[in-house]
Length: 414
Ligand code: AMP
Ligand code: GLY
Image 1 (tube, rainbow, N blue to C red):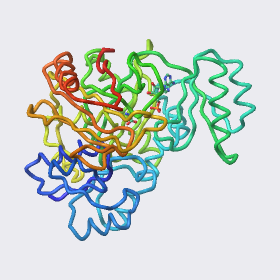
Image 2: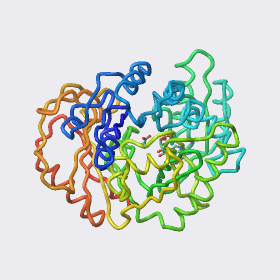
Image 3: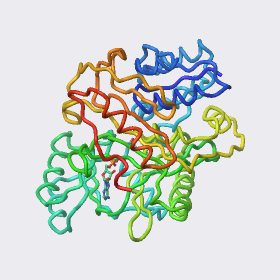
Image 4: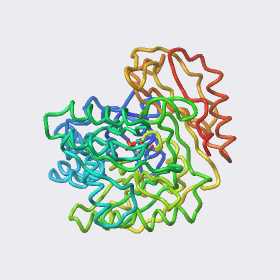
């Protein structure tokens, strides 16, 4: 098979790399990809992830069997619908189904209607009313901007003034059509499950955890994710099954009943509260950086798994649940607010098959030259969490890293 991956980050590097491991796959192209992928034999194309016309033309010309869409922006833009209209196959949700991520309100209403456990909420289109409402609430409280926020639209406010600021900022940005969701703050460990879905057939991943805050000890600003690990020893098989049964499956059924059946990867972000698992958020795609630690645990051939789903074949999925994969993100100084670009450095070559580096915001590989906030993720695969941490941190300690920030405590919270 010849496959195309859309996107350019660490997640897409992992997707393309693992598709390429399959004996069924001859070539993997990535649009636009990054120079780190090229070193793994993935062909990068000079086509933007939003240039649907050129992507479709390429898929037709090269007789691509199917396309895997990594990031949310093309999904929100309707890439899967465009591909289908042109007779091409793209694995991902339709624009209508991608609303589960694009609109917090769509997601909240769906959960309310189908009794899927989540935080209690109120929506506002008026700043004054939202501010008044905040006065009567207990703290902390969560403010979510409706609309595609790329992970940056959520404020967990510890004080009333922080909550009010978040509301004022949300309404300040837009033209009067702004909508926000104010919701109860949930407490407990977070985990996520990725469900690969096509026309009613579903394969769920092991649970994974992302570390969203910039600094050690879960302090500092929220980021796209500074590290991840999977599977999780603090999420029992019973809790995991309960989350699948009470949340993920009802969500997929609800989407079908609403006339927006979900295909592609459903990311269910959960919190294990005292009352059981509840939804924090949905995404319409794999998580970044969770994908980089989840796909290495997949024992089933990834390309054949997706291919079977796309062809309506039953498929069993098998994960290595007895090992741990853990990854630490290298981010540019200034990330997440204003990452400096053009940082040059090299990383020692890796000779251990248990260590793998997935690249993201780089414009060259040798030397590495940074072009984005998250530059690379160093992942380690070992028999347990501690061994995986040792593998990754031992490697990182040997590198000369200036103007680079990374967390020293990935995996410590479990
Ligand atoms: P998101 O951008 O939707 O991924 O949310 C960012 C982070 O905000 C989540 O990973 C949670 O840690 C936190 N968060 C979102 N909603 C809530 C909530 N209702 N209660 C507590 N924390 C939340
Ligand atoms: N790591 C969280 C996300 O991909 O949204």
